[in-house]
Every structure is written in C-alpha cells, then in structure tokens.
Image 1 (tube, rainbow, N blue to C red):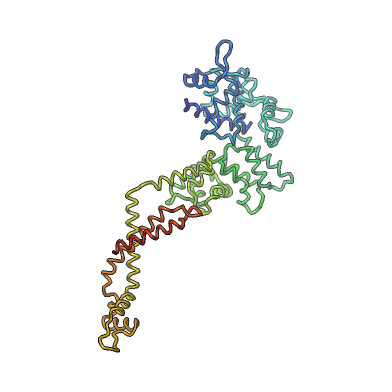
Image 2: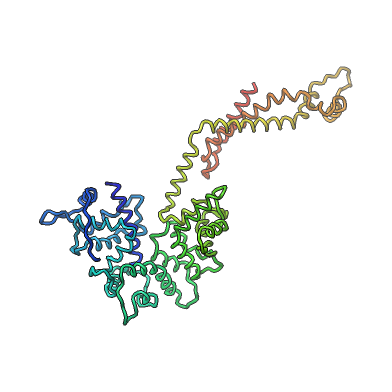
Length: 476
C-alpha cells in the first residue's frame, strides 16, 4: 500500500508541475479498478452516496495523490499542496465535485501513460469533451487558475497567434497541436517576462528580476542549490546585470538537463581522478551530439553553478548533481557526507595495522637520522667527560674542538661515528614509539579544539606525556 502511495504521489507531482507550469476532457472508457487501486481509494474516500457507493472529495483526492509532508518525495516548498487540486478537474469527469473508484482508476491509468503531462493538460482545457481545445475555454480556464502575482502573458502575441490564430481567425487545437504549443510556451513565457522587466529595451535585467522570472516559471524543475544562487548568474559576465543571452543560455541548459547529465557522466568515466574541466565537457558534448548541442555560454552557465562550492576548475559528479538533480537538497548532501565519513572511519583492522607500521617506520627513520646527525657531538662530549689526567698539568684534550681534531687525525673522519650501531639500536625504536603513540592519541582527540578541528590543550598534554612515558619505559 505504501508503495502505491509513493508511486501515485510521484507521478502526480510530476504531472501537477507540468500542468501548473504551462497552465485536460473527452471521455474514454474507464479501466477496471484493481484490488490495490480500490483499496487505496477506499482508504481516503470519506463520504458515501445514498446507494452505498464510496465517494472521494477534492480534499480526499489531494490527500490520496500527494506524499506525506515529511516524505522525501514531498516538495511543497516548490509546488504548494493545494495546486494538486487542479488534477481533480480531470478525475472528476462528471463534474459533480466527487469521484467514484472508477474515476480514480481512470485517473491512475492516465498517469501511467508516457505522455501523461500533455494529455492531462489537454483534458483540462477541453471542457466540452469534444477532442479539441476552444480558444475561449482555454483563456477562461487560464485566467481562473492564474495566481494574483503571476507574470503577465499576452495570448494575443504574434507567437500565440501562430498556434491559436489571429483575433478574427481563432482556431481550435487538436491534441497534437495543443501539445506542441504547450512545449514551446515555457520559452515564450520567459521571453515575455524579460520584456516586461526590460521596459527600456536595454537587453538587461537585474538579478532579482531574473530570479523572479525563473522562480515563477520553473521553480519545480530546479534544485534548492540553483534556487538559492540564481542571482549569481550575473557573475558569469562582466556586468552587474543579466543579459537576455544569459537568460536564454540558462533556459536552454535547463531544457536539456537530462542530456547534460549523460555528457557529464560520460566525461567523468574517462577521467582518471573522476573530475572534469569545462574543456572536457565541451569535448564530450561534441562527441555525443551530432550538431554541437551546447554553446560556450551555456557551458559557462553550467560550470558557474556547479563550481560555486568548488573553485578548482575540476568538478566531480557530486558538484554537477547540485545542478542536474531537481531533488537535491543541502541537508541530503550533509547527511551523505556524514555517512561517508562514518563508513570511511569505520573499523578496518588491516588498514589500522598498516598505518601504525608505517608511522612506526617513519619514526624509526627520523630517530635514526637525528641520532646520526648529533652522534659526533655525543662522542666528543663522552670523551671529554671520561678523560683522565695522568700527569698534573697534562690533559689529553684541551677542549671539544681539540678533541674532534685529534679523533679525526688519529682515527679518521669515521672515528667520529665509532659506536654508532649500538646507539641506533636503542634510539630508533624509542623515537618510533614516542612519535607513534603521540600520533595515535592526537588522532583520537581530533576535533576537541575550540575550532572543532584541532585538539584541546589537555589532550595536547596527555599526548605528549603518554608518548614520553612510553619512550622512557622502552629505554629502561
């Protein structure tokens, strides 16, 4: 049952977005309601007819086809829940304000069609059920469902006249003609909105005006990352405003976003480190498409939004996901990062042993190198301390420099390193243990510092004291 709810909710969400975005009904035989659909209908139907037939109101219908507010599939900050009610006009074929299980099965069957977005929109506007959309019905329904703050749109424009005819030659649209007009209306809405804000015909609008256009025309198609950073599009060019060319580049990019993802994945699969540059994307796009789908400006727009959190110029699939995936949310990113951190920091015995051995080896090398460098000084110090005066007034070595000279003169330069072997046997392990213990404790205490990254002073003292204690125990 839960699976059906999620499936219906997902399909309804996609269809509601398309219908509300563009702002359907001739009758068709109702399909037989399956037991699963009937059970789902009865779960939400709240009223019963005098004949004992379960009926579903518009409120019940919205409850049945929308995901729960706390569901991952919910996107009510992009598509208000009440806007799903427009789909009830399609399900309510008899226009009685309530639907039967057969009506609900008909609607569910409609959602399963590959062209559901277009067919449902067509049924909304085909009020008479004649199989064609009448201009007057079309305009009336459009005005009824247009929000008060909607951007203006002129259905008498030259573009609209190409589909609907002129004022004296209005014509009805078949399903195929209506669908084709619906596909192009998005671009025309953006064009007219740009002209609405660019009253002086400068070819530029402000970032805030661009953001309003996109939010009111295709908010449901964009990720939260894009919605939060729309105003930064002006940074792609040299002006503080946004040109129509940049608006069109953004529009084209969003229209071909599925192809963008395909190209990105292909390019990344060929990269050794899983990252690609703008040039890699352009090259892969040229190989993937026959006529060169993306312009340089469109590539600039893509990489601008994908690189807002990564300024290296080499982007990963995670960077592009913020642009191509409309369901991407910052919270999901943080959650996945934490999960990855837990997985990567999980217990891996072999890896821990190898790392400890590696650190121990480095400590031994460092200790041996240090002991080798200072050994001549230790040798001179020891000989100066051990010299005995056999005759009063006679000394074997006058001072440290004299001692070093006599050692080199009598024993050669290698005499300064006589007895180094036993010294290394003792020093190398003790230094290795000291450094290894210090690293282990510091890694354990990482994140306890004031900035949340380093370690606190008490842990610094514990690390140093423990490391020194282990060194003393080993040497004794």
